[in-house]
Length: 417
Ligand code: FES
Ligand SMILES: [Fe+2]
Image (cartoon, rainbow, N blue to C red):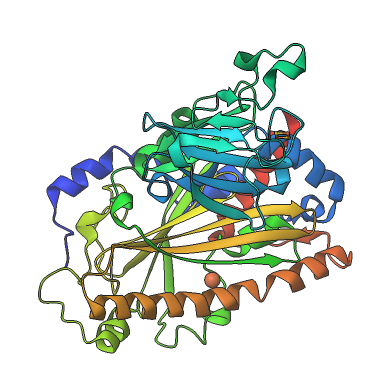
C-alpha cells in the first residue's frame, strides 16, 4: 500500500517539519568529535545520574491497560531510586502512584519478589502484612489495629507517600521529585505530539522479555539506539536483509528519533506464510495509515519502524503493522540496578488475536524479535568489559549513531544542573 500521495497525511506531517534534521545539520548541532566513555566507566557518574536524572525525570513505569480494573495495581521495583513503587487504580478509576512503604515502620505494603508484581486490592484496600495497617487505593490510611494504644496518631497525615504520576497515551509515568520541574506533557514536548494518536491501547496482547545484563545501563540503551549494527549483528536473524536507510532524523529536546527504512527486514512474508494468513481482509497487510502523520511522512512502503530515544531510558518502536497481525509496536527500557548491572525489558505489543492463525503469527513475530534481541544483548557485556579495561577512552560515532551522541550530551546537561 503506497500512500505517498495522501494530501491529508502530508498536511499533518508539516506540523512536525521543524523537528526534521539532515545529517549535515545534525553534524553541525552535535559535532563529530569522539565521545568520552568516562560516563559509562566511572561509578561516581552513575551516582550522579541517580540523583540528577532518575530522581528528576519522568519515567515510564506501566501502561494503563495493565491495570484496567478498579483496585488493580502494579508494583515496580526501581533500584536506581532505592524505591518500590505502587501504581494503583483507585475506586474512583484514577491512577495514582505511591511509595510501597508502610507509614507504620516502613515495611512493604505489597510484598514483592520480582521486579514487577501485579494484583488487585480486594475491597479497594491494601493491608500491610507486618502489623495489619490498612490503606485505601487512594493512599489514605484507613485503619490501624489497636489504634488506641498509640497515645497519639494522626491518621490523616499517615497515608501512603504519593509520587507524582501522569499519563501520556496510556503510558504511566512517575517523577520522584517532590515538585517535578515540569509537567509530563512539557517534558515530552514535541515528542508527545509527534507520537500521539497511535492506537497503543488496542495492542493489549504483550509478550515480555527481560534479563539482567552485566553492563552499565547506557551500554544497553546505546546498543538499541542505532541500526548501524544490523548488517553484522543481525545477519543471522534477518537473512533477507538488503540494507538499511536511516532517515527522518529528529532532535526533540532531550529526546531524539529517526526512521528505519529498508528492504528485507520486515517479517511480513515469512510470518504470513508461516501462519497461513491471507492479506485479503486488510487486517494483516501494512497499515501505514495507522501511524501518526509525522511518522513516515511520505508514506514510503519500505518503512520498517520509527526508533525514538525517549529520555532517559525508554524506546518505543512504532511499526506500521507490516507482517504483524494488524497492529504492533515494541518497547525497550533500561533500568540500572547498579553501576554495572542493568535490567533490560523488551515488550512486543499486538492487537488481540482473533483466531488461531493470528495467534500463530504473533508467536512467530515474537520469536523473530527474541532472536534479534538475543543477538543485541550478546554484545553488551563484552562492550562494558572492554570499556572498563581502560583500553579506550572514547567512542567513535558515525552519523547513524547520532542518538547516542545526543543522549550523551543530554546526560552531561542534566548532570551539570
Ligand atoms: S510496618 Fe506496616 S503495619 Fe507495621
Ligand atoms: Fe539490533
